[in-house]
Amino acid sequence: MPKGEQVYTITEAQRPLSVEQVGRTRRYLISMGIRTVCFVAAIFTPGWPRWALIAGAIVLPYLAVVVANAGRENDEPGDVGVAAKPQPALPGSATAIGSDGSRPS
Image 1 (spheres, rainbow, N blue to C red):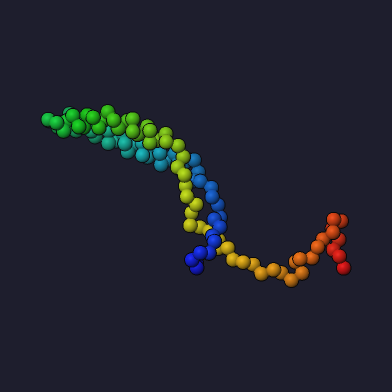
Image 2: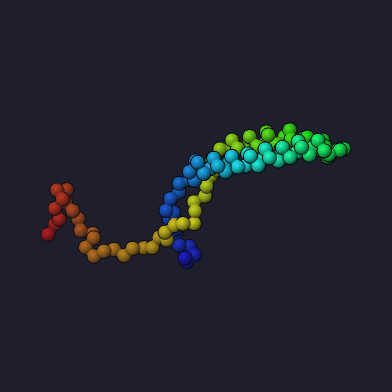
């Protein structure tokens, strides 16, 4: 496609809500999995790393909920489109049509 040629996107519709909810649920569950690992690791880890793991386990739920409820993501229009090409005028297409639908002779 030549540079500077205008492209019209076929659709600017966002992803379906069901697809977006699956992604949000996945991110939330991953975060909660990391939180669980922090809790279990805090039981077996001595010293200052234990406190870092406990802090992570306390902060992660808040961050997971904020990210999950952040709202719909703004999708950018995709690369799928149709290049705008100037169409030549058809011969006789400039004929006027009267208000009664008749063409002048």
